[in-house]
Length: 409
Image (cartoon, rainbow, N blue to C red; front, side, top):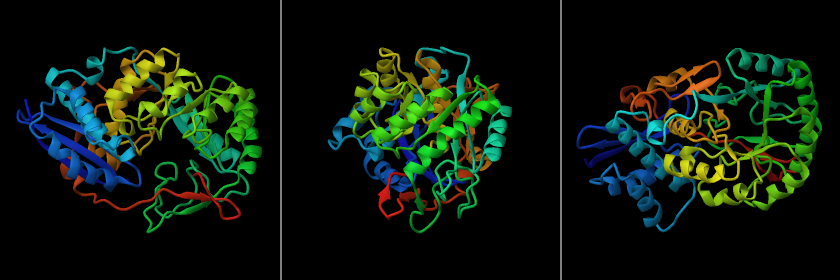
């Protein structure tokens, strides 16, 4: 069997997605997700101009060889654009392999290690009553673990709070990238955030009791010492994890945080290769790997990094909001089904419009997510629907402090 075509499809049903469709001479097709929020066309061009010509006439069965070829032959390795492009190819080849074998991909990765994937939902509010209503809604929907994000007095706009107004009219946490000519500027005050947040979690625990698993995303905005303080202040409220508490380009930063708090730590959604996270795993400076199949090179390296993490009792917590397409979500669901050291899967439902473009076999029942048992990844692209939604430029916001300094968003 040979690859005879590889087509890049850019579509925007509610938000922008980049999908690679690989076709073989026997008519078998496979899909891969190459979405990079706010930089989608960079990956689309990389695929069209540099990767697709290299795929033609290759044997789709040789997944490892193709991955190594695309990673090593370009010389300029790593980076989100390169790794998203490689991820799309890798997923598509696994999709083809599963269809040829007549099995879902997780069976090819070693079979099911669980009935389904425990997931967490997303609750937020501008005040406590709104936050409590949001948590109740997530619980009613079946989630037994919930990420809690809240507005902070004195900060006008804050990542992850759904009810905030934005120009597009979409929920802010559903798609913070706004269709504007330039990125939207938001404000930030770390001290106000650190003062306010522990009281919010105290109120949530008092309202919902000790059993509900609670998570929080710091979104890379704290220094290591600030992150350590927050982790310590949140210890009485027994978080399942504190995510992205500090930028991890400097991996030693997590060592300082770890020294000062027993709150579990999760990180990795902006990482692109094993080299970004290997020391955090081997030194047990984190508890959960947040890497996403789409930004980490696909199924092949994600499975490898989790096998490595298993040696150190570090578990998965794969990134899974709607900036990962249904194809990318399916890819990491199959990994999560197969590995032993699964922890928790982030799950944010895609819009009905997106689900009309990406036809899926996944199920979500009683808090457990399952990719389904269709051969391959279990996602098909409705190209007629995809063609209805043209790409629209969109930018993620950015932060400035009160004095005008640009800060991590």
